[in-house]
Amino acid sequence: MPARTDRTTDPVLKAQLLLARRGQAFFSRALAELRNHQLDVPSLVPGWTRRHVVAHVGLNARALTRLTEWAATGVETPMYASPEQRDEEIEFAATLPARALRHLSAHAAVHLDVEWRDLPEEAWDATVRTAQGRLVPARETVWMRTREVWVHAVDLDHGASFRQFPPELVDRLLADVVGAWRRRQDAEHLPALRLVPVDRPADAARATAGDEPLVLVGRAADLAHWATGRGATGVRTADGDPPPAPPRWL
Image 1 (cartoon, rainbow, N blue to C red):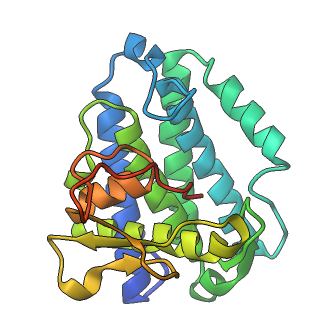
Image 2 (image 1 turned 30 degrees about the vertical axis):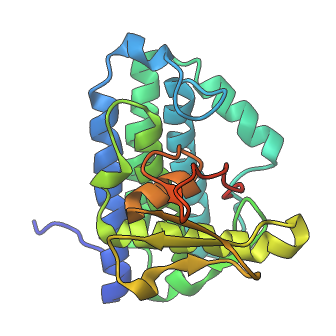
């Protein structure tokens, strides 16, 4: 019996699905390297243990599965009932026995992948709503998941690094973060910033609006690490000073 494959034939979407699946493998490998007692150790996310990160990643897969099912059926199924419900669910799941927590992470990821695989071509353009209230095509769920699994693998704080990310992922993360800052710049009075990756062509620099932006320099992976709020190693201002804390990303 031949293996079932993605119903979509869109080469761009297929490449994006592959990157998400590679990210899931990256996260799963990092989790598998941790012993059960090590899950109780603090993660790189302030206020969260590794347990919270694993719970969040598993529950995020379930939430994106709901959006994918929405796209497939036309029946509205929000990611979460409310922000409070989301937070409560993470807190509860983080208390599960280690075996159950690992099962949640693995099973939820497989379920999401099956829903993606079986989604009809036309359904990828169906409109769904994110937890922040944005209306997006269902294909956006792939990027939403991609950034979750890759970045949170680093948050497990067990050796995974942004420098291990594929270049196309790093570049899209930088574009995503700077784009989010740009959209909120006026409303939140965010500073003018220009990120200059030294290992990319000159036209790869990313900037928010404003005159005389603060220029930050470093390898693209290190800039993405800083911009997503994970630390400033390898990043300096154009004058050689340590960078400030970045604005929030999401």
